[in-house]
Length: 313
Image 1 (cartoon, rainbow, N blue to C red):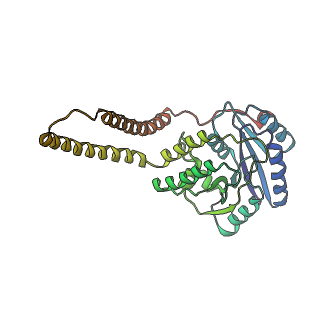
Image 2: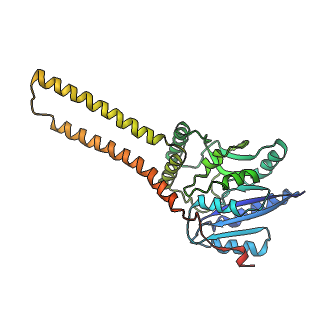
């Protein structure tokens, strides 16, 4: 029986990279003659010609499907939508900028077929081409989240992976609005093999991930898969209560023994500012968790579709 691989490609303003990606992925599909392919491009509310290119692909290639969102919902929503609309026995997710080398698909498929893996993922062993500050904070993030979370996050892991239908269904069973795919892939478990490769720079276009967006994404990952920050806030609160009690005792003893000279108001102001900052930090941590809960309870759709290839056929 011929197996079918569905490839999900989230796209946001990728008009320069898409033609190059299509050319490369078709070369790989031609080499894997015993496998049927389905290419699903998810246009995440692009403002350039990404949607037009997807339309043209769909007109000339029956393997091509596309989904266009009504606005930009983010990469996580695009991945979820792609997984939800695939029909293949196996599903791959990869970026359109060719930082995920398509040639690895051949080895990934062979590993799943011959060694009974449920998922074959990829991870970068180098970050060549990235700004040093971004690489430094990325490594720090993985070290931090692996200490805070019970779910293991692999340093350098990409969204580029090939999964069985069983694993995809497990991921789709989690309907949460605030999604962090790297964590969800790890959370569902299943037997995973990691392929290592050196970092590849974008073939065209510019990255959509600024340092600030990556920082916010990292915070989303920590909040989604760990309650440790809440415990840390509680610990900090208890610690400062103990310290303040000790300081009260010291002041009382000092006053009884040596009198009560007036002074030290600058240091007192600094202490007040410091403690106020600690309180705001703890409130901010609790507020972050509360905001995620608030968004979940609204039960809003993860994405809204405006157009698919069926509207053009």
